[in-house]
Length: 181
Image: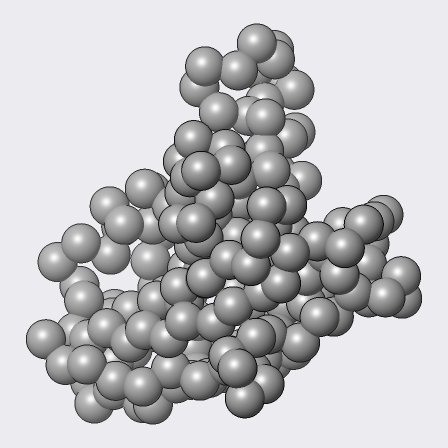
């Protein structure tokens, strides 16, 4: 397996720009939520035909009892996701983030679960309530041009779909400060 570099712009202390999380000014929020994704790029991997990406907050386990999934993306054809790709890029497949209430043990009806999963198949920015959190971006280089992901899909579905197709892995961490509101 090849390892490669992943890039996301942070300040000199490793913090992501506030506009990509819950401390953003109102103009960067959608219905009060941070939906604007940061630009993320990575080194090209020889032989890779597509890429997949995930952003996970393991520090959230103390707050919500599990790691928090911020973004799951498949079928990325290049080596960069532009700023706000979560809203503007219609060619990527986006999975369900952890804001959903459509998980299996939910008390919602099947229709409500499906609707929740669809509406939460996008980037959701950091909103740490208890202190600064660390976030891990992982990018997978794949030997297939397209991964069959039926919408809505979860991070486990992505992992199942890419298993046996991973040529390389790139990782980078960033931090985001505690919510001020």
